[in-house]
Length: 227
Image (cartoon, rainbow, N blue to C red; front, side, top):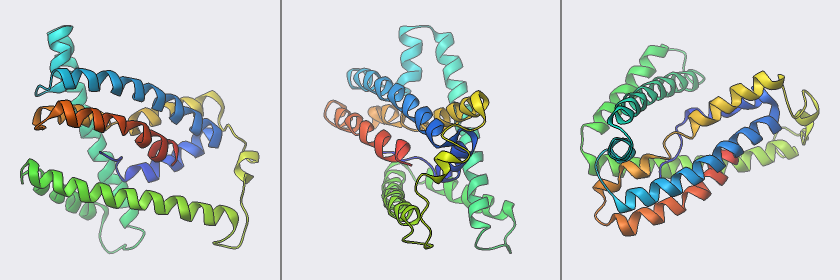
């Protein structure tokens, strides 16, 4: 199961600051419901037709080649921007522990690691992705525990509770903040569709893909809405 990138930790803070706690929760819930139903349909199509290119190839076969062309280039551009965003956020996070390494140094290290893993083949890539995803899941669950301790005063000694639901309130910055968070939520759900792209490489997509698609509900509920 593909998990969101490390930048979601930085992005959720931006979402809450832009639209308030309730606004962020509503945005991520609406996008999550939409993604869930889209993945059910995409999973059904990918199980029936496990071809390389997945939804890009399907759009050209069942709708129009022009749609496949546009979708393919937009998907490429999406991940180019996502990778750049991840590199930038990693440099921001690592800079908290070491100021001796410049920002571009951390970006080059992350880029070199990504390129090395990508060139090692799908087996090595899948193994590394599994362990990294397991580590991220552990961090998410640990983050829930730490958040509860901080909120209740177990860490820091100060009870927070629903303070930020009163000041600045459940909604912040009006419709503009809500719109910014709505767009941000849509971006951070990217990666869920990766399940369809792996259908062509699966030994038994009719068995494996439905199991993976069913996990999408828990991924949305625990990871995205939970964070």
